[in-house]
Image (tube, rainbow, N blue to C red; front, side):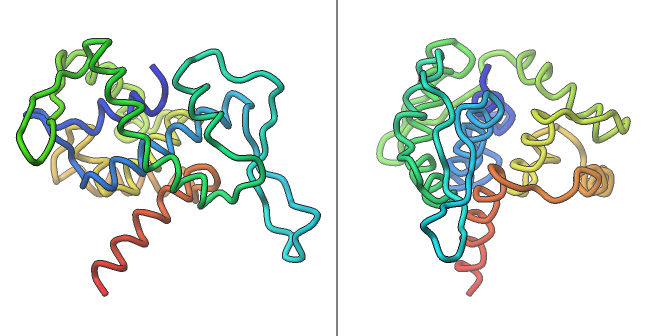
Amino acid sequence: MLIAEELAVLLTKDRGGWHPTGHDVADVLAGGLSAELVAEGFIDREVDPADIWARRRVRHQAEEPPGDPLLAEVYSSIAQDQGAGAVQRRLAKASRDLVLPRLVTAEVLTTVRRPIIGPRYDLVDEGVRRRLREPLLATVLDGAPADQRVRTQMWLLNGAYCLRQALGLELRDSLRVHGAVRELGRPGWPEKPAIDAMNGRRAAAAG
């Protein structure tokens, strides 16, 4: 599975639907898609020499697109020299339509049709989510080292305020969850634009 697909499974509630809001789901999945392309060496950020502020722009790094059809579609949608925030917004608009149907086709999720408010996605096999939780729980509960994939997932789920719920932990485990996230340090690109988008939306709603 891609990082974004794993995140979609972790975000699914036991009885269907999402732990965070639909907008947060879109940003989390978009962050996962960006992180996958960065990890595989398809995109990176470089300083724009024509920019007097020396801002960084997202650049294509590979001559050939990714072999995975979903990633290839995402890669082709990222215009050369976009800012990281613009890339995040573009991917967030399309992320659910890209990721969720493929999980339905793979019979990882199933669709429950609902009039007006749109479909609900349910988990087909709890064992899939249980296996995806294992490396994250090892970091949170046992202090195991986190590789970049685990770090990305923890940062994005924590940014959506649902890391504890996504891992199936109780409220009493909150301090351990927060401590494990602190140990990871501060997220940078490509996770930070997704987290900034979620935080900005909350700030706007509170204002």
